[in-house]
Amino acid sequence: MRTLKLLKEFSLQLRLELKVLCKNINMPKVSVIIPNYNHARFLEQRIQSILDQTFQDFDLTYLDDASSDDSNDVFAKFDCQPRIKAIYNQQNSGSPFKQWNKGVRATTGEYIWIAESDDVADPTFLDTLVPLLDQNPQVGLAYCQSRQIDSNNVVVLSTLRQWAEDLSQSRWSNDFIANGFTECQQYLLFNNNIPNASAVLIRRSVYEAIGGAEESMFFAGDWMTWLKILLKSDLAFSAQILNSFRSHESSVSSRSFKSKVGIYEHLLVIYNLKVPLEISLETLSDFKKRMLCNWIDLTFNPDSKVSLKDQIKFYMLAAKTFDNVNGIVLREFAAHLKRRSIGQIKRWASRSA
Image 1 (tube, one colour):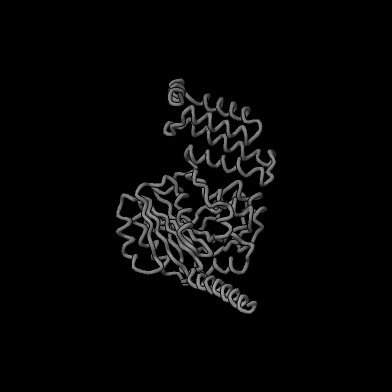
Image 2: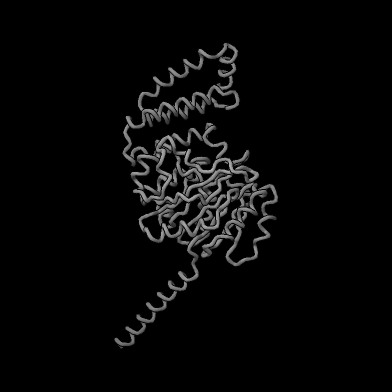
């Protein structure tokens, strides 16, 4: 009887191990997620750049967020391969980061590539970044250098190093692997120097460990995600330019931190992470002045539509984040008022009411 019991237990264990093995065999290395909203004119080029990758162990999930253009007709040309699937929203989600999380939940790959629908990848993108995660299990996020292109595929900037020039003139000229906590403390908290999600490959286990992207954000959810990932893991960077980041009139990036929502979310990032990153008020001093000045500039912009409610919300959060907010605000407001006519001041006051 004991022998029979042992055989049954062994058989059960063997079946479980075979089940896990089969699952791993069928599971792609990379899950490519394409969140799309009204990017029909760029979508074919985007999808083709993924299918043309020299590294082919991936599946592809297209998420359409209730587009009103012919995006889904464009995608239909590709919807004939077993490794390609689509998820269609009947109503717009209101947040690109809800779509990120939805795509991650619907896929199984060990690594995640959020391939924005208006960007383009070079053929060796995955072949370059996958080994950085494979060979460095402590790395939760790997990314490459990008170029910037316009809506006609014309190169606007040959590299995006200028996004981080105020932090370092040379750091992003070479490959490196960095401690995640230090990266956040010294660089990423002050400037989103990972400006494009399409350039990033994420380890799924770390993404899930942080609870996914922050769905309440519209502009800064990617930045918050990178910071939270790097509080739990390290970062790898390839200086090869393998991603084309498209900027055009309808892209989120072209509108982000010029808006009241963008500036507020930027402040929210600092507020949420200054304590876990052990950032002192002294370190935040210069950054504080720039942010408050940007908000005040926006307040006096006739097209900004910053209401009194917006003002209260922003300054309450600023007071929780920085010290001596009132002094800077009063000085900057006074400087702005001196430069304006009585008529301009009245129009600003009536708009803020």
